[in-house]
Image (tube, rainbow, N blue to C red; front, side, top):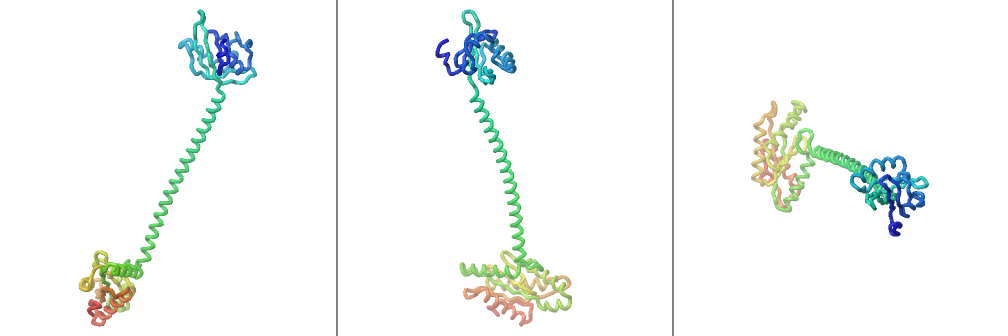
Amino acid sequence: MDILLNEAPCGYFSITDKGLIQSVNQTLLRMLGYDREELLERHIESTMSVANKMFFHTYFYPYIQLYGQVNEMYLSFRTKDGKDLPVLLNGIRRDRDGKAVIECVALEMRKRIEHEKDIMKTKQQLEALCQETNEANHRLELLHAQYEKKQQKLLDLNEKLETLASTDPLTGLRNRRYFQEQLQKYMELFEQSGEIFSLCIIDIDRFKAINDTYGHPVGDLVLTRLAQLLQEQSYGDTVVARFGGEEFVILLPGLNQEQVLAAAERYRSATETTPLGDLRITISIGAATCSPEDTELSLLQQADQALYISKHNGRNRVTHYNAG
């Protein structure tokens, strides 16, 4: 045998059509642990386990007969000391000197198998990790959805609480706190841009007599109906609020003295001509319009003084502070 073939980095052997070993290189002998004389003229299947013999007999020979060659057949030889040696086997059938010979090359597969096992193990670990990640992401998405839902509930609750904090529970109008916040906002806007606004203070005439005569439930009904009427007569950014007791306040952005008097007269007239249940009531109104010298407190005091004049002059009338 050629020295290069004898020491080739892969196992080599040749067999007859009946499977008898005719030649074997030194590399395969070292792989199997045999001496050359121990293998020559032995059947190749004698170096295999029963399962591999059946596999070799069932597939190798038919392929060689049909196609003249076998490529990358995976099987195991058995070494002299009884261990399995996994190999990748290639074979080709040739005619030499009128006799058929099958030449085979065997590549040891231990390291590749171990590598494939490592790859498979790593793949399984990655798949498990990917599954865990997907499950964690799904749980995170659920938690995020729950968080957003609870956050929205909290925002809704805060909005409701803010509304309750700025709403008069009896009439449903804005309360004194909200009115004062809006008055401060419009006063600051007037100082910055000169955008004028006016306000009215409204008082129900002889309201104590209504409570004394008909009782507080009827008095509460009158307050509620009047609040509804004032809202119906208001437009745009007008702020209608209950100031306390039988007093109401109205902020009218953009209205000057003449315009606020017209708006106040509309409120007064509508109240006088609209029955509130079985009762008819009248209201007195004091109005004031902001000026550069005014503060929030001074503007309220002006409207209150104008209201006093309306009351003093016979009630059911409108008075502007600057015309009082």
